[in-house]
Length: 41
Image 1 (spheres, rainbow, N blue to C red):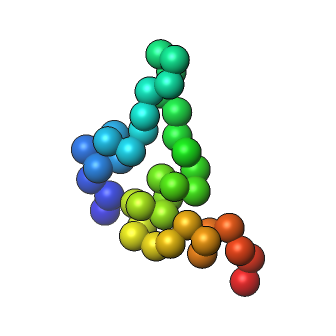
Image 2 (cartoon, rainbow, N blue to C red):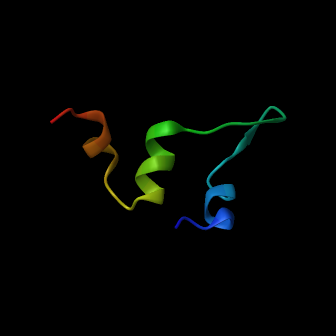
């Protein structure tokens, strides 16, 4: 299970809004390279 604190630290605030950077966030959470997500199998 993914820890809540780990997720919260990966959600930056930009101009007062919390944003999720999809590829980067998912890659870091699942400890895989970003390029694995961007290239279809």
